[in-house]
Image (cartoon, rainbow, N blue to C red; front, side):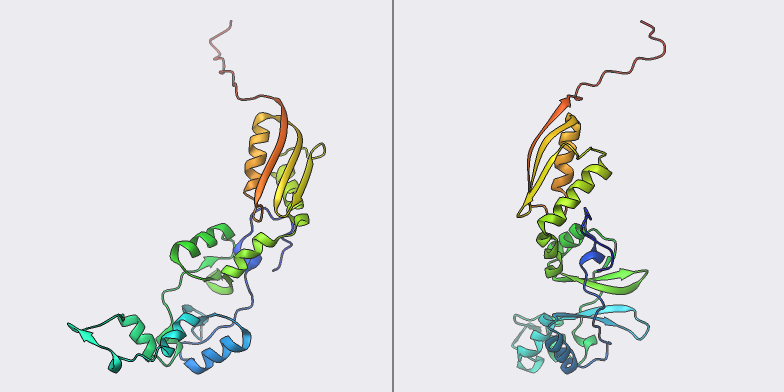
Length: 237
């Protein structure tokens, strides 16, 4: 996974992606695709050209169309349309190569795409995996299982991420604070300088990938909600 992610506040696609990626060519046979999936226990294969251009993706779901046993000659038609089948499903059922089965164009993300954004895209588009790109080239793939890695970061890793966020992002002195993490729940105790520091601390910690909940007992010395209006240079009173 490259860089150390133990203190990473927001994970990116490249932090959890699987790399290198098994790929197939557009002319790879269905038999070889199935063999690759079974041998390496993978459920999706990006399809790339000889120039390494990403042109599609083949998944287990695509292969299921082959196993359905329904070919054009077996279908019942009504007003020229196959009952319960789409042109795409027929094409895949009759396909013999990756080009016949693949879904195209492919939804992909850049390697620096925030993991939460990638996860939201998967949910919104109802897909299980996203190719990861760098300068137009395929460098990895993120699956739903990869996204779940964010939720299995150890409590020690999350504790370091919390301290890093407070100290280096919000410039809050963590020395007098008690920060505990148990099963992904972060417990914050102690006193910070301002009320706004307390509010920001809770918001930032809650946004850290892998944090399940924040239980805050933080107090503050100064209430900075009341902001005195600036006095103009013409007001000399």
